[in-house]
Length: 149
Image (cartoon, rainbow, N blue to C red):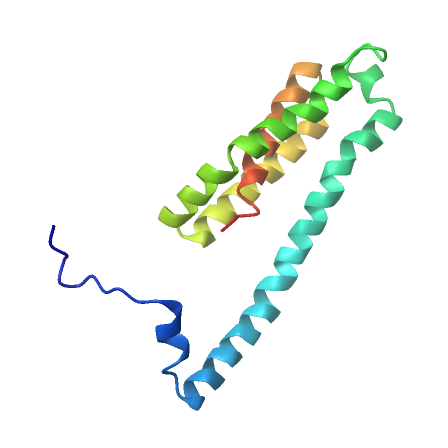
């Protein structure tokens, strides 16, 4: 099987061992610029994600089960908690595959908008089914927020 003429095999060593001091300086400046522009936004989103995960526990203390007509001695609250975890685990790898095909700006921006809409929907839900649906969708969208390697 022949390779396409434009296919080039290279390793990470090709980029680091042959760079000049000027290129290293430019690379350092670029990484510093990325750190100062991207990292604060990602930190804020991680913080919001962490606070959002504890929202359901706070809502339970404030009367979630009563307002959604759930049995306080039943498993409804646990089901609502667990409905987030299943899609979060299942869609983490497919999200990484999609991230290789779709630019991160579009992918991360899209899932953050959808995640925010699901968070608002969770606050506006009127029944247990709506809560479980919102939690499952939040797990789906949040699975793409922290891409793996």
